Length: 344
Image 1 (cartoon, rainbow, N blue to C red):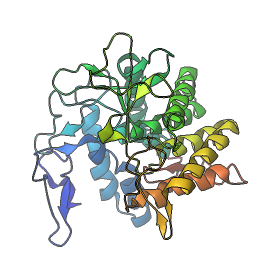
Image 2 (cartoon, rainbow, N blue to C red):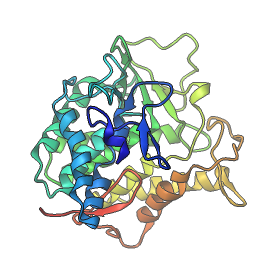
Image 3 (tube, rainbow, N blue to C red):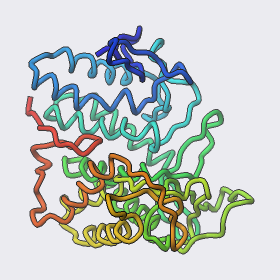
């Protein structure tokens, strides 16, 4: 709770558990937007389990404060000052790193609370409309849908998509399953296919950390690599590694559970085979230095989310029981833990 001791109530990012104190990181006065808006599901459930509403009150107050802040058509900068409670002006706007789970938790908080907190749904709907109008673009030449970002400072569009952004199809499908517009599902299906192509474009059948897209009206950098097998995309050398992230297989599971379309299982199996062939080592799995080569260097590092999320979602995707986790009863947090939905 020390994190919430800032003047604004927006959490500090760094906490000293021994001294029960909190502060901004040494490199910045700011917390990241995703950090401060991705504790609400957990603190709400903790409040219920402990019968201590203070946990929920502190976390929910953050969502309420951000609800009242100015935004760009529902889209938020990726840094926020815990002292003033305001966003960093002209910071990057992205559904990738430091921004992603803000949007995810708007919908999931609304579901967790039994669809009773209307401003959460309003903020989510406004944000997804903002994504459609400002961040969703078509690649060249094949017109694949992707989600770019608005660059810091200029807010110019950057045709760059983090693998992290591949959480969005699953979130959109979950919203559609709960009565949100049909175009949300259409966007989910198209974006999921683009995410699939970021895997299929490489000999390892694994996706890089970041993918860039060619566009008709935006010139590619002079040093951009030649177009990949997928033609519309390329990966810079610094972004070609794979941490075996979960976001795409997470979305595959949501789409499979909601639609029953076994194509999503087939795609997941192709990716699992890539993990087995290139990332498996005697005592676990390792991240890879470059997915663009046929024999990628193994980096001797396994992220914790590979076990807690990537493999969990693959297990659920391949389970004989499509409804192992019932999405009418549970909401899944950003680390793949199911939390019960309460109807009040």
